[in-house]
Image 1 (cartoon, rainbow, N blue to C red):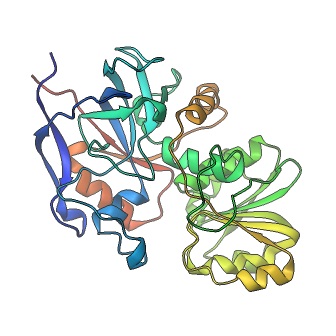
Image 2: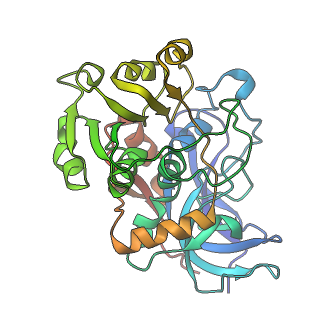
Length: 341
């Protein structure tokens, strides 16, 4: 029998990792269209620490209103404990994974022992990977997929007036900046799977890892600026993004494209237009159907999930401190132990 309460990590105020509190809260109520999942592992993603610090990195008019206390997190892998009457395709005991409600936010989130998850955001967990690796996949892998392979929705683009359009990758040269991180290491693998020649940009510590997952060339940004080294590139996926992303315009061939995952601060639109280059970005969105498709690639080992580190749910503060230290290889994941009832 499921308890009426659970342990979760909540914010009662905005700030650094120290504001993450592990405490007992009420079990979420199952609503129409939802599945109750006993969480086995939860992925840690940049939006988690954006929320934690009060979205200071966003312009003031972009910051969502957030009532406190709140549970952070979106990525989960776990076991179905209950299913709403109107939900089909999932049954009690199924192992599932997903990115929940993103980019919106609900009152049941990932840093908890249980979540009430929209069924449309979930997919059956690939049998060939464990819950830790499954929880590390959804947001970062969907981001790489929606940028590079298939957008998968018709929602208005909050980042630009036009719809983001992936470009064909077969036979193209693709440079991936921030290649060892969460989005970056998936982008390397997806681009290679689609037949691209992949140039990976990261620090020297990640060279052998990136070569192993498919990078054809490697640039150590500590030794040489990639914008002064690469040339005749068809597509740059900048998984770091920000104000410095415009430097990659000079590496692109005519007709090339720059996809910054974090486009805020980009100021090179006029230069790109003069050079005949495309600059495009999108906001990743939850998509259970895409995750189901990606599940086949994960199960076959075509796409691998790299785990940087794991922490117990009660150690979420330490996980956020690890994220703040940077130089992450793959994903940080929280593990959720079985509760003694």
